[in-house]
Length: 529
Image (cartoon, rainbow, N blue to C red; front, side):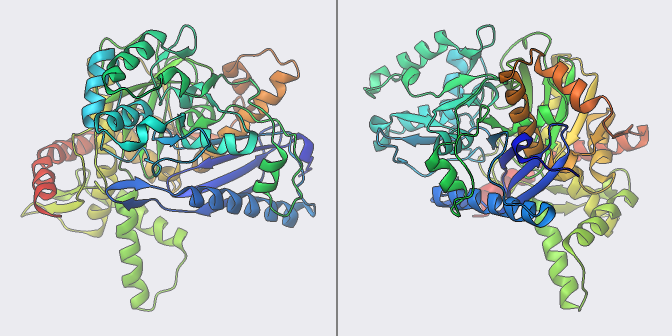
């Protein structure tokens, strides 16, 4: 494969458990990859990552990419055509006027803003889920937290990293849509709701207007600054990376998922599944009402409204179970790779009973706002006459990881009658053969399509946005959807799995038992510290 660094495009994405960097050609071919594992921590009741972890993880992922470029092509990476940063959406990073972080980063995973979420949703008449940055800010005001008076700006993780590299306090419209409600006609924050927010906090004498705290919004194709000398040296301490590379607007993982699955037009949808899971459908018309903590309304990277059902918990619990099985196997002297272990155990689920044989599991490692839990306690329970086999156990783990999502999708399909012509999957949940796509199709009662890039969609999607910005700045006039379809997806390799009626009925049977078992989850949360 030919390698031209000046016409390559770098996407870096901060996921929940991995920071991934992907370098692609102008045709979307993956030239090199790099990654770094990391994990959030529960500190004083708050799910967080330290800024030191963010910085070191960024450097580590880039160093891994740079090493792979040198190994594969025999060159030292010193420039790229353009780059972009994406990350987990939502959350709260608040800074004072000197750029000092005022409180530890509060991630999307926290369910500590229920009061703020409900009040803002009621006042705005649009959903403001607990994960949203505005909910975190308002909750801090309601709590009377000391740092509030010192806030000069707040942003998302992608916005923070982008500013570190460019000095620009901006956000892509998709990521910004998880901070504060948008005016989709003007592709900016909703001015009326900004004024309402200021009115709500006026009695607390906070000393600022939210209008002055939020990052500037940019859309796909716009230039969001260039890599500074300080940013280049930080990213590559060896000093090989040159300054001056243009960056596209920083985006959230929802936006990169839409791009990676070519789901940016109305009636298209995608589902991203990994540590968390969310499904998005691009809307033809607004929803009839707000569904607080059930359905978000966010944006495509070019500013179209999208309904998103988001569940905090997906693969995290079955990852723990697989690690436990690995310990047992190694205790008996078995040798195997991580990929082999996952493939064997997850594939076994395909041979289980359609309804999991009477085994019911709940995968709530953390709280789950979709079903009304502020914290989680994973459990497994089975009926007296259950068929307790490995196949059924693994099937119940996989089905459980999709039930909270199904709760939200029921609203879109049954109450809002949202039209969906295609559903494309991406993320780690889909890496193991047809296991993920089969379970998702059973849960959604709809065909699920996977592209060849499904396993690493996010950073690849971010790299495509960098490429789009690069070409737009050179005169390309095509809209994002037409550009993506023509350039990357017209001949893309894809597989589509159509669910069988028996398997859909099996999932529904499990889902009904799961919903009744929420009483068990409630008791566990109340009784088990």
